[in-house]
Every structure is written in C-alpha cells, then in structure tokens.
Amino acid sequence: MTKIYMNAVIIESFTFYSRGAQSILLAGIANNIEMKYGCGVGKCGICKLRLISGCTGSLLKSDTEKYLYAKKNGFILPCVTYPKSDIVLSYIKP
Ligand code: FES
Image 1 (cartoon, rainbow, N blue to C red):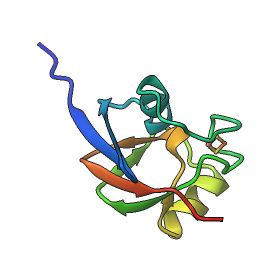
Image 2: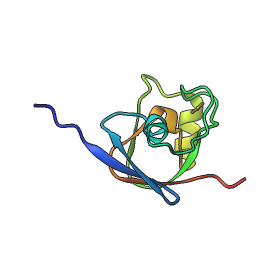
Image 3: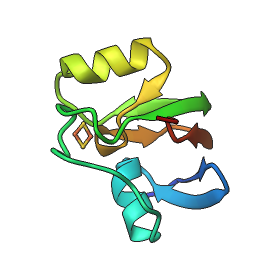
C-alpha cells in the first residue's frame, strides 16, 4: 500500500494540507485560499511567497530562472513547489 503524506501549509493565519507532491498553489485553491497566480508553470513569478520555515521541493523537470531566483532569495513559487515538510509561508507586502 502506498502511503500519501500530508504536510501542513500555513500562510499567515490560514492552514491547509497538501498531499504528497501536489503543488502548494493547487492545494491552496482546493482549500479555498486566495492565491495569486498567472502562468502556473514557474515563469511569471506572480505567485511568489516568502518561505519562513520548512523544506520544499520543485515539480519542474528543469528549474526555471524565476524559480532559481526566488529560491536564492528566500521565496518559493507555489505553482511549481510542493512541501517536503510542514511549512510556513507569508505573503509579500507591496
Ligand atoms: S504562477 Fe507564474 S510563476 Fe507561479
């Protein structure tokens, strides 16, 4: 039997759970969390959130320039990222 892991995703005051390698964006939308997004494939950067704590993985076969830039600067792109552990995120203040 395959085990499906559930990781808690906390964004500000919202908590929801993501299954296995489901993107954080899709998990958030499935849980009625307001999530900004554009391309959905890691290229535009509109979905970017700050990673406060936890481990994440990439759903991309080869990481995009935006993905690598975000990761280097403490952000994630939820459309192409899944949680490897419980994670805490925050919105980016304008
Ligand atoms: S929606 Fe475009 S990078 Fe995430």
